[in-house]
Amino acid sequence: MIITTTNTLEGKKITQYLGLVTGETIIGANIFRDILAGIRDIVGGRSGAYEEVLKEAKDTAVREMTESARLLGANAVIGVDLDYESLGANNGMLMVTACGTAVLFE
Image (cartoon, rainbow, N blue to C red; front, top):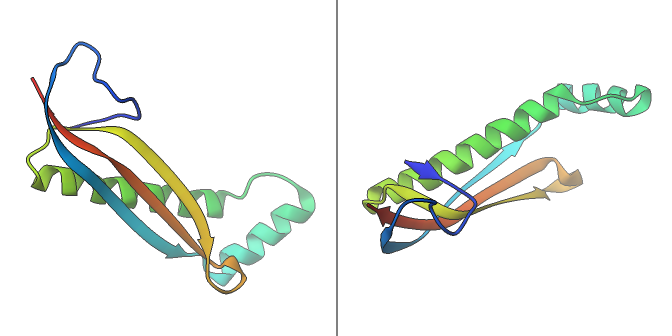
């Protein structure tokens, strides 16, 4: 399945628009990651622990969106948009949503 942020598929003809598909995930960062991230904030550098959580959440949202498209009979998702949001007490949860348009192409 082709997944793209563009609204077209270069060199392909879209024959049918099947509708909006989404995938969502909410994931919490545990206290050990919070402590390590706090240390990184003080001394500088990137927080590998949070980057890993962010990647996991994005991958899950895209996988769910792709599965929704597959259930509609699509062979591509176009116009994909990823959104990230902090939720919960002290922003301890991360929500990632992926949405796009499921299509059929030749």
